Image (cartoon, rainbow, N blue to C red; front, top):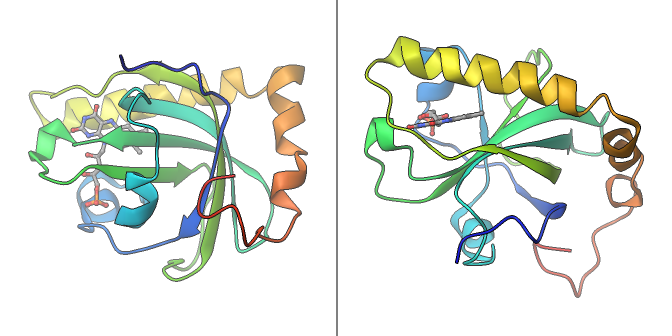
Length: 159
Ligand SMILES: Cc1cc2nc3c(=O)[nH]c(=O)nc-3n(C[C@H](O)[C@H](O)[C@H](O)COP(=O)(O)O)c2cc1C
């Protein structure tokens, strides 16, 4: 049974290239985790959109929204985990380490009738993420040691 019992969920991995549609078509750039990280997620983790915190290469811990699934709108055949960090970055961060804490679930993945509807849905995920992350409970995760600690060699991609 897919569920959200394992939240909050801590994930770490290298940023790899996606299909590149996020920035170009949607105007919403996303950082993709590699396949081995996606495969390391529990089978039971519900597919859909999550909110939480993210940090690239030990930088500031920023709010994020993440999609986990098959991107039905684009008929993807591989499952992806794509993080959109709520910040403007001047450069891509391919090859750098991305750490995220998935704090809560927003909604299941949907197949929208148009790209505009998909963009509208993601923008409302972003608004909801900001709201949810403003609570003291959610802000505690922003200060979590996970973001300041070095990777534990025994823990693999998932801590
Ligand atoms: C917060 C968020 C929500 C998303 N929700 C959906 C969705 O409901 N349906 C869908 O097909 N794709 C969804 N996507 C995935 C986009 O389709 C995806 O980011 C886009 O295909 C760009 O991927 P690419 O950079 O690998 O090309 C979502 C992405 C994000 C960041």
